[in-house]
Length: 117
Image (cartoon, rainbow, N blue to C red; front, side, top):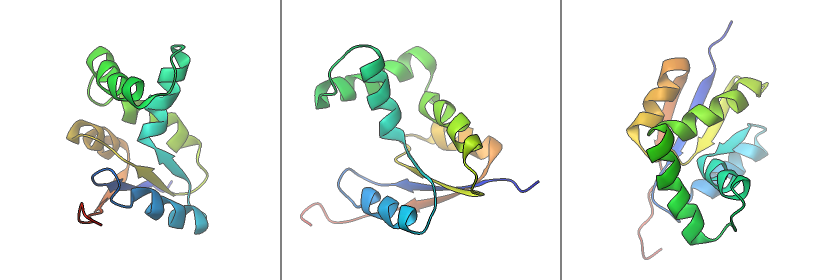
């Protein structure tokens, strides 16, 4: 059986990760966003999805469940994807990358744009 490949898009907010994800979707690749896991947890806990609540939750669930929690929550979705290549948008730390590397071949694509752009 082929080992799935993960294309991890990383970069600062506003650098173009979402645009790269759109291109991947256009090419027929499944895209999973780390931020969606956080937003889902905010809603699951009955909070409004404000920037403040999402930001707080990002730190809270990592404190409660470990630094790789978001990657761990994405693994069932990666497994369910029919494609052998899955794009993940926005890993935030090295522990998340390492968790994915334990199971999959991973390519990291760092996207950069100048803050003024």
